[in-house]
Length: 175
Image (cartoon, rainbow, N blue to C red; front, side):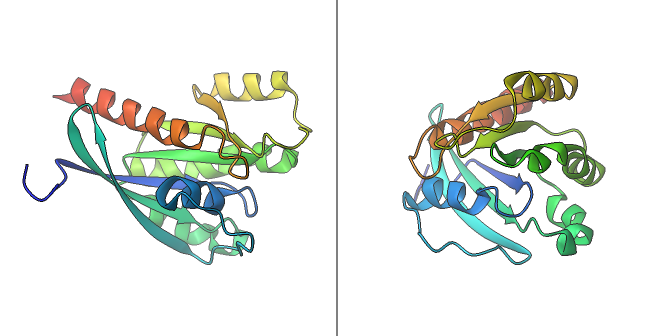
């Protein structure tokens, strides 16, 4: 492998309502930093990270989608041809979790039934969502549940690594 060229390229989308911490998670993961004045994402912002996984170089093209309702018509376009997604919700705002089907519908209609991990963000704060609510909703949708905190840098890399593991596993099933 010359010049660290990737063997595989994967498009990953971050889904979720405005203010759930998608941008903070991707900043932690890609740049190992956290800006205190993260504003709202307008449309979508693209980030790229190369990682070595199972002795193979993978290029992750990560799309951070704006969560505002005004961008809902663009979601399907941004999700097209995705390899996998992280659905991020804010444990301090129940409505961000309850909107899961809206996000999954947009994703699945444009990208097909691709792997999705549900990320409960802001675990450094008190939750208003019960574990039973989370378990019931995510089991019904067959989604893996991970907890993260971008502020404390808790499980951020783990969420992306777990998603990468699923992508690689799914790809090997198809071969």
